[in-house]
Length: 93
Image (cartoon, rainbow, N blue to C red; front, side):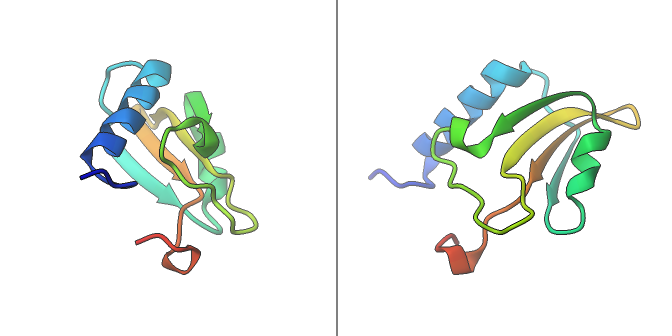
């Protein structure tokens, strides 16, 4: 059974992200919504991947949400952040 959010979709998204960021797993994941988007700019050695370039990722439609995955270092820790997020009212669960 294939699903937009199933294991196969997650695997493809992970492969695309690893191809751009490398194999090192982040220590911390952060979802940045309204008001917190500026934190993504504080990441050092950042790699920014627009959601549109990640297989299976929907687009962020809320004004002010950047719609990108950002991987980098914050205070010496490896971090991945969703700069913008998806909402149930946009059809995501």
